[in-house]
Image (cartoon, rainbow, N blue to C red; front, side):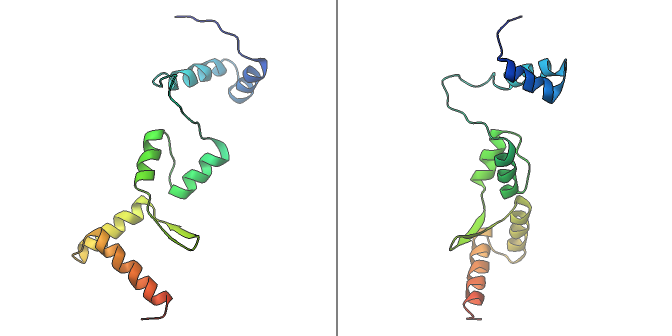
Length: 126
């Protein structure tokens, strides 16, 4: 199906500048196709540029879509003490799980023991 619609000059110029001609038309089509599964009544947000890079830095990985972002948020692993936060990547969490298994403990018990040990060391109780 061919549909004609008016695009503001500045938007078209930005696409041409970024993609060139004729690739700008393909880019516009791709961006429209990316939105095809969204219900127009649903809320959504787009993350790009510095904000996307900052989020990816927090998680230590690239984020291609909302499903991956949701998975990362659900598996968010960090320790925060008085505003100081240390994040753990998926690989680091996998290593902790392997260490827990090696020591015959569940991951949760092992992590709690390690944090308690760190707390004792910070307070010089060791």
